[in-house]
Amino acid sequence: MNVVVVGTGYVGLVTGTCFAEVGIHVTCVDTDAAKIAHLKNGMIPIYEPGLEDMVKRNVEKGRLHFTTRLTETLADAEVVFSAVGTPPDEDGSADLKYVLEVARTIGRQMNHYLLVVTKSTVPVGTAEKVRQAIRDELDQRGLKIDFDVASNPEFLKEGAAVEDFLKPDRIVVGTDSEKAEALFQKLYKPFTLNGHPVIFMDIPSAEMTKYAANAMLATKISFMNDMANLCERVGANIHDVRRGIGTDSRIGNKFIYAGTGYGGSCFPKDVQAIIRTARQNHYNLRVLEAVEAVNNDQKSVLVEKAKRYFNHNLKGKKIALWGLSFKPQTDDMREAPALVIIQHLLDAGAEVAAYDPVA
Image (cartoon, rainbow, N blue to C red; front, side, top):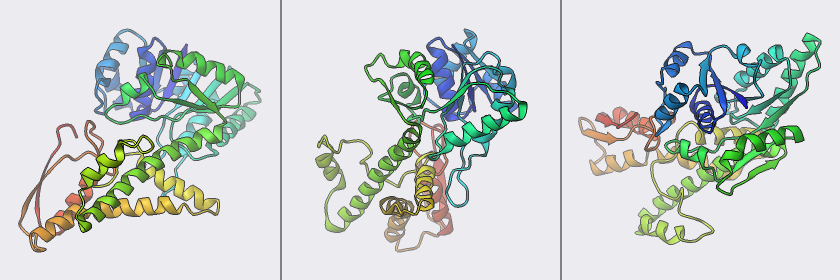
């Protein structure tokens, strides 16, 4: 089976490498020539436990290839995964320019059936835009070539992404085609040996599932931070409260640790995007609006504690921070709470020294 993965960022590189690990022939494509040159030599642009060795191993075995030329990869491709970035616009909505450019390129170059899969986190309705972009290019060429579009959102945790991909707790696929469904069953068969099947659904539901999952996790984080702030005021211990509720199987013990708020490339962007989608459809997601507000406030909680401890005078105080990335076991500093904390400390006149083992 020949698979093409467009985009060698976090999602694309993990996806392509893990497919290669189970024997699938994979070509990863990126417009960044310098990044591709490094990847060909086994040098990866991100820190992810186990990934670099896996990239080197599969490059050496000839199962994993890297190129800047998407057009040259399509001749032998059966499935094309689009894993390009969807950065937020100023209003918080997802920018689909890279996703649609990939679709147009496919439409301009394809000459046989392809299954085009959106792996990026995208708003509901994106698959139809991708389908139309491909069809428009085929119409301009005067060709009628069969193709399918599908949604296959990722649920990888940074710091454990390789394990998550190889041993997933679920694989969500949105498709309206029996042919595409059969291809997915074949593609993901090695990853379903743990007993968790591929969950097939319609495309809009798959697109929404990714946002709903991240929004739920973000909600748990903000809820616990709100509880932690209240516990301080009433004399309760949030760690004991966490243990008390975490043993309830209906709640679970994940994502209920109080801290400085969520960050990273997914939660902030995705919460903003789904809030924007709701507003565009004349609905206010009041819970998620509160989740976002709590998270923004939480990033200043530690600084306010430091100010109170030093009688509201941090000028000249030497303060150290351990950890710069948004979570352990990753070098990803996107939307990291530490960056906000550092800026607040500097604004208050403190001298800051920061350390992170991998960021």
